[in-house]
Amino acid sequence: MSKALQAQEKTAGEERLISVRFSELLDDGELLTGTPSILELVSSDLTITSKVVSTAIKTINGVSTPIGEATQCLVTGGAAGTTYDIQIIAVTDATPAQTLYGNIKLKVIANTG
Image 1 (tube, one colour):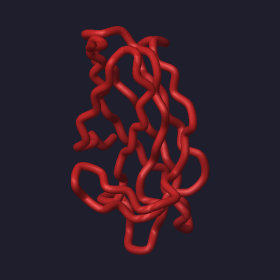
Image 2: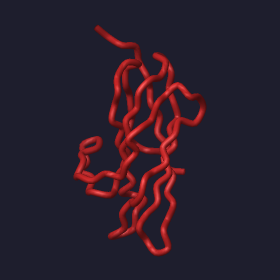
Image 3: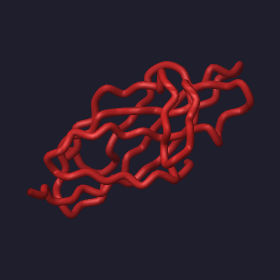
């Protein structure tokens, strides 16, 4: 399983778009396809919706990521002061298809203001 370089953070009350690059795991000309599986591994504190493969060029951590080389989802909920492990499973359009695994940490902080 690959550990994503992206550091993710949100407040407990936010709904955040989380994007994860898979570019380094793809062969030349290969893209992600279908609907990725994205889930929180330990609790049921987070709600994860709108799971997709990127359909537009996206800048992630200052790096331009081509269409089809990242996954995205909306995340809500979580307890302030908690860091969650999120697993991403994505399939590629290669023949035969590859199944790629990624893992990110999402830190939830207290609402401010």
